[in-house]
Length: 442
Length: 130
Image (tube, rainbow over all chains, first blue to last red):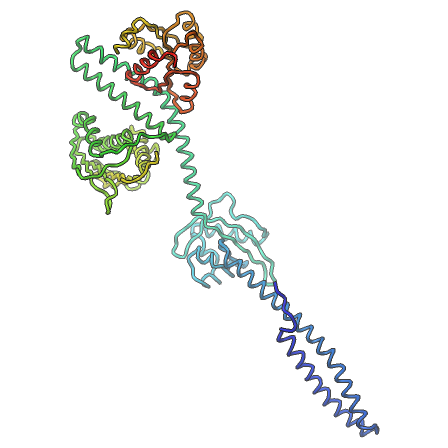
């Protein structure tokens, strides 16, 4: 901080000088008048009296000038310091990221910094004089009032509501999670509580994301354990079926048996692929990327499941646009996505119905392929839609709840998106968009 | 397969703790003309390696006594070394690397197809020293 110097101090230079001059004039007049009176009573030569007066006044005026100058300088300096420290405090308050609100012991807001105004959606000056409870959701205000009274009885610096979830209320009524630390100041007008408020919406979201990540990691471990247990028996089933198929030719088994063995073999291989897919998700293994024509993938998957579908009373209508671009993808993974969506659509219609499968160019300008799978089932309640992709969430009685979770993971690994629209009683539509022109980096 | 037929009556040792696994692959290998020996743990596998001198060992990694790496080491220590195919349900890149370091000729994560196995056997017996 720069201290003010007397020589460029208007108070220090002019005022003391004026006071000294005033002193000279007034003192001079006074002495001249009194000298006149004295001279009338006692006869002293006039010039001696005059000289004495002039010398006295001039000699006392000089220390007076310096004394006043000194006092004025001190006054100016402390004034400046006060101004400066107030300005500095305001800089801290104005630039603080935290909302800072001071409150008197009646709960009225005395000040709120710009961050607090912004946080709670108020404009400048609107908060001062308001009760602090306007910043708190109604359901919490009575609790807050009693806490506030207790705080003013024994104030100390601390975090507010340790272990509690605290919420702030904006001017528009919306709520947001906050963290508050409390402090207090004793002034000559009484005690003030000062609250430092931080919006922790983002932190909460990150925490949720982290918890979700941990859940998924734990889930991955569980999945890996299950997959390892399945690998041996499913290997035995597929190998044994394959072996029996080679024997079948020699032993003259009927075509029904042969077909049955083929179904067992094919599906055992599929289980192997699915479990491997689960493992891949658990440990993000390298995929076999290639350029895919999604129409071919859809048709191949349909070949695999068409027979079963028609047995279940499911009709499949396709509208595959031959002009769709090729996408970069892992064939097995994309097949799993299709199988999951088709099987889900079938399961949504236990009494049979039609599955409509459509492919088209997505985006404008074209940047990928959109695959739409629509069923005519009962639909999904709107509150369930956000949870559809959660692991172990299922709307089916016997669903494990990993199908759509797996599907979304695969689509995300392909930089794609999956969306769902559902109408109760009319059916559900899944929209998968797989972009072209992206580098899988492998 | 024709190469495999030429190896008729060669002995292959299969080591796994699952009897269904042993039974299935014994049948498949017999069908291809091999004589299959089976063991369910490392000590009995090692005894068979030393007494019967099989032309090839196919071993699982997790065994109730010992593990597949012990079996592989003992097979590789024979003169001449016996080729080894390691199979495992607990596939990780680290295990694949270790299998290679232990001298396994091939490494097959479960589940594998019969074709995968036959390919691996063909490679192992055609380059037994590899």
